[in-house]
Amino acid sequence: MELSLFLLQLTAAVMLLLYSTRMVRTGIERAMGVNLRNMFLRSRKGVLLNVPAGALAAVLLQSSTAVALLVSGFAATGVMGVTGSLAVVLGADLGTAAVVKFLSLNLSAIIPVLLAAGGILFLKFDSRTTKQVGRVLIGVAFILLSLKMIGEATMPMRESPLLPAIVTYLSEDPVTAFAGGALITFLFHSSVAAILLFATFCALGILPLAAGLSLVLGANAGGGLVAVWLTRNSHIKARRITLGNLLIRSAGALMALLAVRFLDLPLDWLGHNAATQLVNFHLVFNAVLVAVFLPLIVPIATLTKRLLVDQGADAGGPKPLSALNRDVLDQPTLAFASVTRELLRMAEQIEVMFRPVMDFFLVSNPTEAGRIRAMDEEVNSLHTGIKLYIAELGRRDLAPEQARRATQLANFAIGLERAGDLVAKDILKLADTLHREKLGFSEDGWEELTRLHDRVAANIQLAMNVLVSEDLESARQLIREKESIRKMEQESNDRHLERLSRGAKESIATSDIHLELVQTFKEINSRFVSFAYPVLTRHGELLESRLAHEGTAA
View (cartoon, rainbow, N blue to C red):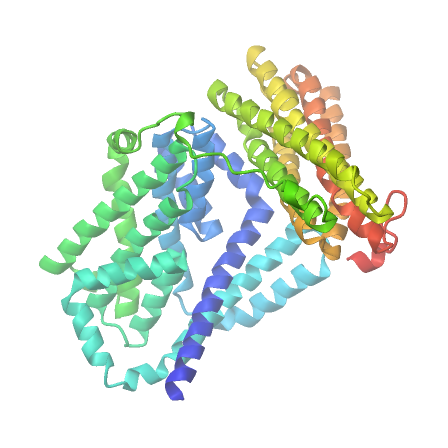
């Protein structure tokens, strides 16, 4: 019974640690996603600038993996090169080491302050950014609280007769400890959480420094493996970045493991106790990685190109089969489910097309633009299939409600087909015009456009959830987002006109493109918001143009 209680308490503490690190990361992404994106774009012309940019992003996101995924997306569309992206990721690894150092300090006294301040900001304010700042503060408090819980949960371990044998084995077999650290980090999908766990064990006297060092080095290699796993189906340039990061972290970790094993390192300089030495060793290790491997970025990038050869577009697997099952046409409920699955496939295609479009205004990339246009052709094909399927379904004897549902699904397909055209034809055409005329948005104009783009991208995700789940609260939120986009459009137009009145040259030159792009984003958002109308109508919450009970939708 005591063993079961110990495992339950330890598991709960670790899960809270994982949840809270993710909570902080998502809060920062939602509050500062555009600012992080623009920070990378400002540093992309200098490799040395990429290192501090990556470190700062990792400090904010508390995850080098999240930074690696972000810059991998830039590389896929040609905005950043493989070498510059690798420099960002090197900086991100150092940034997460700094995060571990900060969180390992004794900050338990500020937990109530963080919880109170975060709760007030999240619950009592309506501003999206303010809410996310509150979310971040609560997440940091949860991290500190989880570390205390781990300490309390592991108290019985210190008296266990098995503990000396386990720690002796790990100390004498660094390879096993290294592999264990990599495995734990991969399972956690967070090197920050894993290393904080090891540092806590060292602080409690459960884990000796020798075993802890091997575990930390394994965690560094495991962190690189996580990014490789998460980008396994991504563009080849994205996979080259995460592979290069894995090669750097693994090579560095293995060399450090040999140094720890066979050299008499002055670890006493790193702190007065095992936990402090472990955390400082992790920080120094990542600083050394930057110093050693930054000059080798170009040959490492070349190596990744040799290891991952682009086989061309035709190397992909077979296309997924259509979800439109004609065997269930006589069963309208199942037929509607088939159409919904195919609509979801259309929506997912458009989301993939839409997410990188802002990058095309930075760098002309005909190859990737051609890929997006080819995806639009597939969207058009899916629309045609849905249209014919619903027409065939309509020849059955449908009840009035079933006929209305069939019409709604057909209208969804029409709206999605139009959204695909807006991305592949209108937006890419505007990007081509920008490059052909050698123009560029003003800094303020670019920030407005990227914020609007990111908000619409988030709404596309929400709309797909509504399509599948028909959740009432999500549908309400989607309608509210339509109003938010309308306000953002109006504010952007007003600020743009104000820049024109000041005679800002960049704004004057790109005025038509800016205004058309804002209008296009708004229309794409409207196409996806339409998913919410049937749900709200069914619950009697939709009037002609707005929610019936605005107060209850909050």
